[in-house]
Length: 250
Image (cartoon, rainbow, N blue to C red; front, side, top):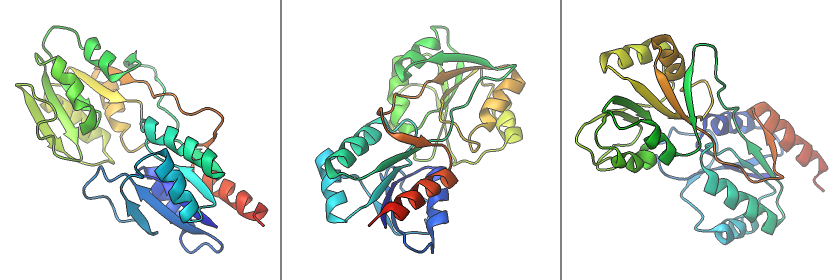
């Protein structure tokens, strides 16, 4: 069974690892290419986009893909929409593998917002020290609030993505540790954390650290996903789905 995994997440990596050497499966992992130095994967990997919905549908047909698992980031809404449309055109079954979102715990001071633009507005007018953990592509939104000092943590270099006077850039990659996150926030005198509700354990320590320090956290809600797509939350559940489809294949 020829499988395409649309990846870039911890869950995609976990599913890839479970498929290694498994009889009857020929998996291919596709990465968008936004990270210049992705971790090596244990299955064949392609890097780059498909150009369009039609481009992805054509790839599915040309490569004789029999099932697709969308294990992209919960905020990769466009890719998820494209996958849904392309799979419908090509007649290929699609599963969404999505980690559960974080939920507010006792002691959290969350400010929920629907978008990155709303997150900028939620910072207010008074200058403060902001810890941005939102990815490089979202940084330009915060140029609309140049009065703040931004501590920015990304995998890729920030470069000119946030053209404001006061930017402290850190390049680092999850997983993170709660004690280290708390020490970082204390050292940099962080007053508010801004994050996407990505879910998962690898980056949750910043949420726990903010809770321990009593800091407000501006939490950007996930975008809506395509309707009608079966969804699971673990790599094991995705593997079960693939095995069921494999068993039904002619």
